Image 1 (cartoon, rainbow, N blue to C red):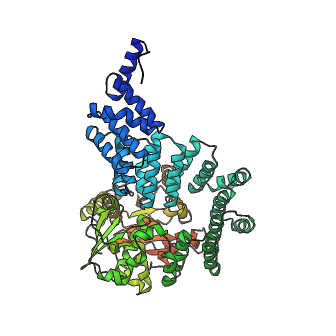
Image 2: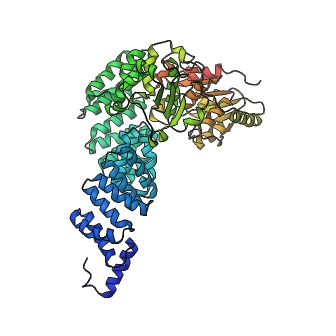
Length: 620
């Protein structure tokens, strides 16, 4: 940069500013600045010409190496970029730009695992490169670690306040069936920038996921008149109408609306399969699902829905042929279905069992290990899943080990391709033996923590029964499984100490319940976080005389723990989970839960009365 024509004071001012920015005094500081500008403009020859002499004269300054690394990235020379950025890293190991550069160099060299790990370090150090964030999300989705990606990127997205990034997180959570968690990101994207069509549709989807169905019913038709992507709006609108019980309107719109996107039409036909289940028109369910798959041109979630419908009907063999198609081809490249075959499982010395779905579903699916050809006394079975499982699976009766997903993916390990098995793929063995063989508890909670909770609750109860309750499922698919706390408390016939087992319980709802039932003392035990402390949650449940719950994670814990007096309220229609079958009072899965089923859709009167009639006096 020529500075000879500048005044002495101006030259001094620019030198001082450059020295402050780059740590190099005099003319060389201005050359570094000029090199950065050339890099920004992608004038790569000029970059090298300017900065190479500085890298030789000032090798302990990080900026020449950062600039040379950036130029190598622009030339798609991954190894060269890595060398330059590692020079910079040796000088400033916590610099977020340097960490981001190393990560990008790894990507160019197809070293995905180290790339994602270093990206996480870069974000933690303060890197706010949107392109790097998007690249990280794309890589993590391909690796099947979407929820880990959300945990890492969420604080970055909050600080960046970027509407597009917020929308990406919302969509990613939706695709991972974490619809409740996606709501704040849909709303944040809309608040930051309400003009884009996808942000308006995202807000409508957020209203649906937060169960504001009346608001969706009002806003949907207006958006159909103003937006181009009417297919997406219509699918959301139809879902709200179905959850409002307006089945005739749903059927009429599905038949009359002209969908332009086959995938949207397929979703609408799949929604009709749910309608037929709600209306107990069982013979129409499978044809609707099959039609939806043909329209979509790919199985995916629709195939999974048909598979679990058949599972509920006890057609395990027919169900698995669809359920096994629940993953996209990309996932199956890494963990093929053949890995779960009898021939493969029977001869493996070690199996990594990969978790999928939510906590409750995984507790249920683990029971299937008892039906497989795996002998856990001879074969090492390592369950890879959410780290929260680790303490609660200690001393489990299935004789399996545990490894958190974070450790599995971060730490280098030697694996045989055929030892990775999806947990859900074990459901193929449901058709090979009597289902009762999976019954029985397998979790062994901490005796110390059980004693602690029993002592605490008994001291507070003073001889009264101690009853745990859970009444709400936060997800959209759990809406028809949920009911108000006041209704579930009506099952308790006498004075009792009621322990709140509901994660995220609404304080106002508890206040209303206390006013409605002054004979019941409702305790919020803040010592246990049901979402984080699964070991504590298990011990808390076993410390209770009785549990009354809807079909949620609490129910599966009661089953896996073998609680002797646990009652589960089961909905009619499509929201009846397949584990429970369509009929029967004793659950076919764990064998210890008492099921109280709806006889009329959306009406909990029958199940509540059934629990009351089964109420044993717990004063003993």
